[in-house]
Image (cartoon, rainbow, N blue to C red; front, side):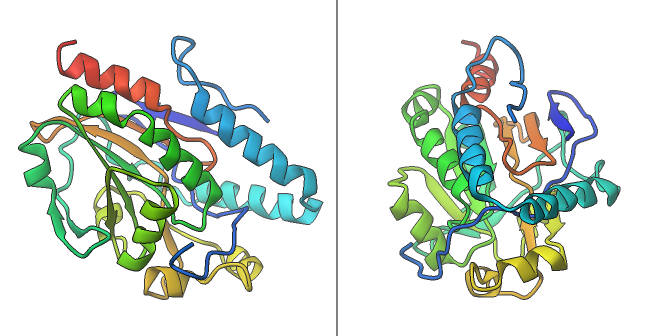
Length: 256
């Protein structure tokens, strides 16, 4: 599988066909490489452990289904669509879990913003990721930065994400994946995966549309100048940017 990270404009993979899910119908509810040897891979270790737990009980057919889904993402030719470091970040205006509209221009006026796109509260890998980012929030804020998570879920379900993970940072609802599309990270869930999900998760109910689209779990560091200074993605949704590395990039951006 292709690993991709960019600190300058580069081709990046777009991941999307999901695998392991947890039933979250109620609103209430193999080792991958690190980016460099200098950064801790605490998050990836946790994600790998979750993947191994799933693989231990998954059928060969299920494993093949997900491998095929990731391969199909790579074959779509959308590897150049993702916004990269050096690009101007698309503006967004999205509601938070309470319905309050949050404008990216207002956020950037206060300092750099780390944007974490995730798929939904039903995704265990996303919940692990958001919980890990929560541990870095104080350091991010001490550096004058802000942390925002974005998913295509309806506000009720973004509230579920925030409450379930006891998150203290802003969680935004990108219904219809407009912001994700502007960043070039919208991806189509394959019909095979949609069929496999029957009885497990209802994307229409969670996202409020029938597109069966999800954002690539991508991470951006956007400077107050509106430029992207760090971008990370991987074709496998179980590989995410390490918060420790992004924090290091934020420190450098802030002259620390």
